[in-house]
Image 1 (cartoon, one colour):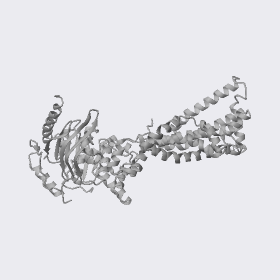
Image 2 (tube, chains in turn yellow, blue):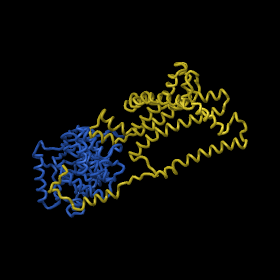
Image 3 (cartoon, helix red, strand yellow):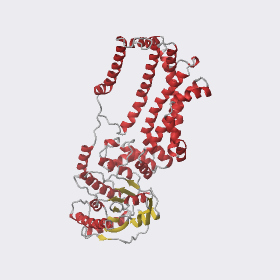
Image 4 (tube, chains in turn purple, green):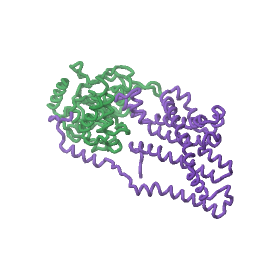
Length: 296
Length: 282
């Protein structure tokens, strides 16, 4: 096919002209240097955290908040965390909650994905439950804890139920908006290539909707984690094992503010860490490979 | 490939004429080889439900594209040329009349319509895959097609790393991967700068002559139409009707500045202006 028919004459300069245009107009991918990443991405949040610590320390040191049962010094909280680590409890707290959270999130994924696909592709289903699904997103998942306890009792299934009710709407809605935002041009192009029906869904709609879906997953994780903490705090029960939410509740019951702070900090750090380690890199990778991530 | 012979003859006959000699009108030209159509549009009408009831967009259009023929559809806004192309592509159904094509035509859009989640090469491979080409052959074919559009080495490039001209060439390679006898093009170069467009005109002409495809090319650019086509079909606007046809006998390679191309362009532009002017009179 590529063999050139001698009767087909090129204008002699075309190949060279074209090569020149290609070279001039191609965008060069630049990779950011490690040091630059350090200065631009790591430094600012570090400064912010240090500033918060300084203000906290200042409040205690200058006696602005004089009551250690209300505001313990950073060093005291650090000591509580260190002791938990030395006694081997710290990882146990974290693991209890993280394993629940991730398992619950996986269930939410398994339910939310087909649900989102149904809502996105079937008009009747969309009209029927689309608005409810969006509405559920604005319902704080704490509201589900009391009925879940009544229905399922104080056990792990109750926790998973609350996580599901928090995360499934986000995941499904993310997928729906991802599918809605697929450019019609891609669908037309797919159809002319023969991607119709299921083939079209698999080869065109699914990959095109991926960024929206990932954004939904990210939000779904945040909701999972928040729901779980609400469930653990409200429905703490010794037999369930001590997760981070129970730790906070235990601290409150013991009027141990350092323990409460320890729990809050750990909940915050774990939530951010999972997002930073799993969801953000996934999202960045997808966006970058499509040229949708503009780096300055 | 036997069908290529009569076309070669037509082309030789065209070259014998004075280039662009007063634009030979061939409306109502009879095609002798009855079965030989890449596309056959017979008495096609199309109307859409608009705010003021049914709106007629295409009115009784008949047009044949012979195998290996390059036809441009020319018209001002609102002539329904893109609608007609959608009908031929099978993306929409006519309100009346029939459209016959030999298999599913390939279609190129004004936007490249490449899938950004796939590399240039994988975009082409997807077309091959959907056509049922076995996995072992896809890579080689994709590389071959990239070479045909002079983008050797662009296989692994992401769409956003390519320039506008390169994207349209990958889109062309993907369309060619369908190995359809008919290539439909909906103003594919309209968004490109003048130099790039000129280069792509040459490339398209070269590829058309190498592959002996039939092309139905929609544009509102008269110079482009004359530079590329063997036959220029002018559509009137609102509703779209075939207003006039010209056979272009100017030998390749053509340039937009060639006297013959320019002369015929002036003549067609006059006619097009006349069509547009009619709409301002009531």
